[in-house]
Amino acid sequence: MTTNKFNTLSDFSRQTRAALLIIAPLLFLALFVPLPSWAWEGQCVGVNDGDTIKVLKDGQEVKIRLASIDCPERGQPFSQRAKQFTSGLVFRKTVRVEPVTTDRYGRTVAWIYVDGANVNHEIVKAGMGWWYRKYAPDDKILEKLEERAKQDRIGLWADPNPIPPWEWRKEKKRK
Image (cartoon, rainbow, N blue to C red; front, side):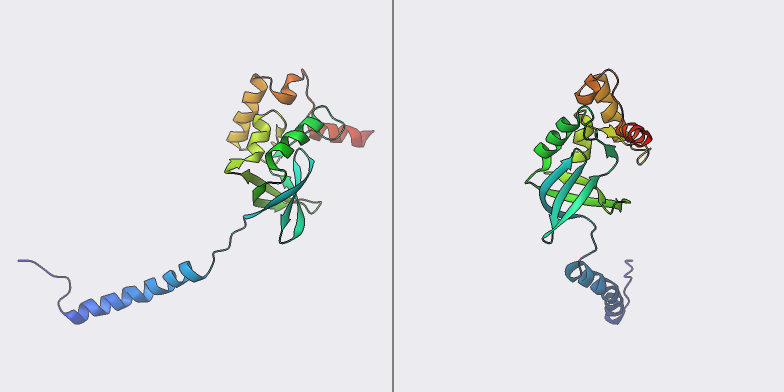
């Protein structure tokens, strides 16, 4: 004997109506109400240094500090090369900005992507910046990228004793 979970047509209709009452609002939300997204796209219109860029958002320049990395400071070895490397990746290109926070200078701190590539990662991979452990202590990807660049003596790691920018800044403050 086959059992039918719907004893009557009205039972089926009741259950169908109940399902539609749940599904219809969700479908409406999915189709007509955009979900909030913190990520946005814009054209890179400037590169201040290896880890700071300017991106147009709604006609306004937004200063972006690349998250979890730190590049050599102006006047420090590899500073100009890091800036040129970052420029080659992002300048005049459409970038995807995934904000993380805002820093004490009012800059948006973010992950930057160009054509699906993570720019923050590419900078460390090329030896043009450090993994900023203070702000990303558990980032295993940046850890591995930096270690590989060190082993291969790529970019700033060709220097026998590269000075991290946070130490460089601290020393400049002391003087």
